Image 1 (cartoon, rainbow, N blue to C red):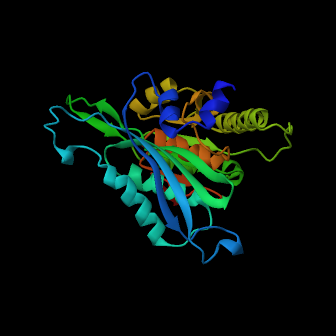
Image 2 (cartoon, helix red, strand yellow; image 1 turned 180 degrees about the vertical axis):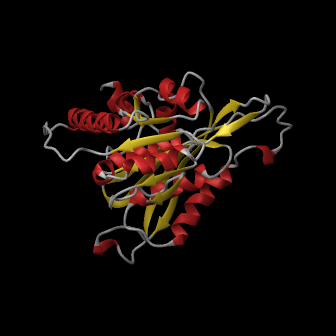
Length: 302
């Protein structure tokens, strides 16, 4: 069995360890927590409680020393079980995916929590388990920039998603002027162009094709205004953010290199992932596009 397949069925704790960064975080876990709930999209599941098993691993910030054996200074295990109970009590749900998203979101609202692995399995459907597992991260800590007074301040960029209508709008220059006048770095993101593109029939290669198409749109935007400089790496973006500049994001390299990258390849989901990664003040979305649920960055429609 390959390492990838073995890890796919391993406990979330092993997956967390396998995908840890070079500076691994502490982890706490909840194993084989079983509760009953009325959940499911099929009519035969409605009105009937069934057993759900939760396995949760949370990567946490290192605790400032000394710990002094003080329970108030750590993320309590009770918060994991409480997050599950609270989301199950909030409303009846059809999908385990929705429940997993909400449990992860509630856990990540805790100040110590940085990344959460949530696995939920139905135990009563048949002679097997059916389940879902997700990994979600909180927004990164905002970049610190030292001002002329020698004082460090957090920098929260503005992220803007432009649909094709906004890209072609005659008032684009005026919009860029308005964003540039805010006095903060601006990261422009774009969607897929209104052009046919190759269909590979293979998800990994199609993802690359789609992101390259997004980058074609980014270069099209760059041609319209010299302020729209295309940037593809975190180093480039950090450099521009520190200097309060405007830029256009080419997503391929950062997304493909990310250990804990975006779960969707939809362009607006990629933009939201970047906004969370950069601890953006907010993301402003142009166009009639669906917004992913559970954002940890404020989302506004233009």
